[in-house]
Image 1 (cartoon, rainbow, N blue to C red):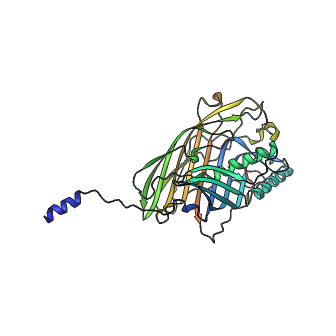
Image 2: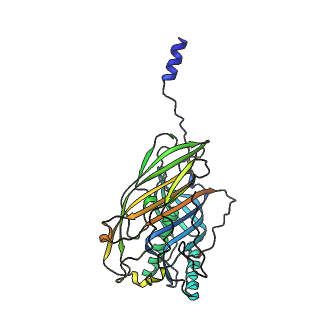
Image 3: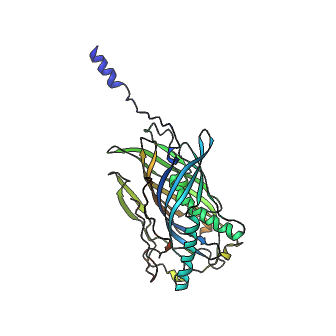
Length: 378
């Protein structure tokens, strides 16, 4: 009888540990976060201030301290969350607004104004109990005329990239065993004021390394959107990524486990920035035709999962994109890259997010302008 009992016990399936979390929205309950991100876009993002001054940027970095609170329940599985940007540092490149001291000063005035508008601003999120961000809205910005609406939309696109790392769909987090696939993740979307279409899959799996529970992610797909031609004489101008890709290796957040990220890296030194066109904000209005742009995107990253509270406390990611041959009528619109990391802060933590200032494109030296320092996402 004893032998049979032992055999039966060995043949029985292992009992899986099941955690029950009382609040699936705990990560929004008075939490604070440090978010750092950098974006290279194939089309210019217009950054403007209240009094019409503006510049365009193809590459920028953001660092922000964000506080979040649950605001209102929208149903059994959804909540409205209000997040406040307590502090932000925005570092942006310009096409050619570095030629004179007056240009540099005007860009700084715009960045100072944007910093002032975003610091203390509120970001309204609609979230579900599985970790999906259903909607992002930047509140409190004046939109009395077309120029202000354009400025508000540009800021909303910046904030959407800042908040994208919070979007991580985790079904049944209390049963951490089987891999799963997340469809149309916000993290794999590209910033666009005209809306994003397409189909993407992000595959996730659980890892445990030295008692640290991790989520490893990887996947991709295609996205499409409408992009206006911003100049009749210059249909598309953009910085090109170098030939091949640079391998960046390191460790997953707060864990000894290996991680591998592939990055396009900074633009090639052969790019002649002095020949880039000079556009004003007025040239973005009413120009036709528009281009149907399609990109193949790929993303990968790691996240740290807090098994006690039931939510992600750290995450790092890298998303890259290349235009498809059929995109934009065969016009090469250049690469896309979005890298970032986020981590939960203690209530007394006050990290330095750095100043808001103009920076040069990577590998380009411009007297009087700070150099681009790549974001360390590992």
